[in-house]
Length: 329
Ligand code: NDP
Image (cartoon, rainbow, N blue to C red):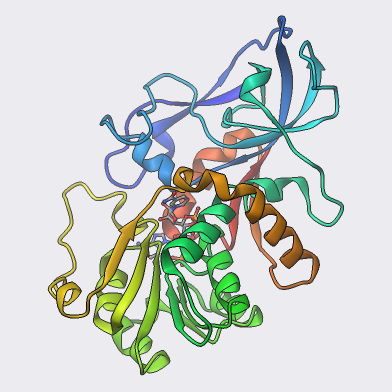
């Protein structure tokens, strides 16, 4: 079985040279263990954080070791109760084609007639729950309010934009290409802005002349500064991610207008999705309903073969994906 290991720690934007492909023997499952053939693995922006050698909410990846991340696969052989060949399972043992793991480290997934299995890595998985929990619990959007979301065409942002529409909000979303903006409009987004066209503040102001009530931040940097600038009093900021600075080699300068947080009584609140794990059953029920009635749709960008995982991951930082970035194994 092939797997991807961290060869060197990236400095700045990761490159192919930071990774290596290796081959390992995957043995038969022991007592209580299951042999899984992965079908899809996820690459996610947060993995960049694990490539630094520093303490964080997840431990750092180690040089020379296989990388980890979300994956879905099929049981090939089981020595554990409750798992049978052909079962669809999710695990945290991505970046590899096959694995043997204790049953407790696997979760059996309910195959859905109307969604492909890999949706459990996107709209029905961690990114979907991140969008759902961050928007509804922290953003608390009310009908008629204006929601601004950056990274709007990505895995998380595209769900935020659509759920905000379901909640009766006006939605302003940014993305890095015109094609991504077109997709957002096709999903009912009121104002889709290509931030690469410049004058982000002017474009957002024109889209939301009365200001914004909720900002869902995936990007940080200039986007965050603009959101503070156009925020209405008591606006809620769900600080989900700041991808524009993940590859910085020096700490970046914060929003120059941060002083407005005081006068506008802004509520700026960061979160990690695991905080909202208890919402998962409700999230799955709501999301499957929205998918079934066509109110939530999604895109995916698929790379083929475990050896393409590094380029898929690196592509996240240049907008190579529309919707969820995946690797088919
Ligand atoms: P995406 O699918 O959104 O992929 C990343 C996207 O970010 C790219 O497609 C690109 O789109 C955009 N991007 C990259 N660099 C920049 C930049 N410098 N400025 C503006 N946009 C940029 O990834 P996810 O949906 O998985 O994650 C989105 C965010 O949510 C990330 O910040 C991530 O870290 C965070 N996150 C946080 C979680 C939590 O628990 N707090 C859980 C999951 C994700 P474009 O073409 O528009 O530039």
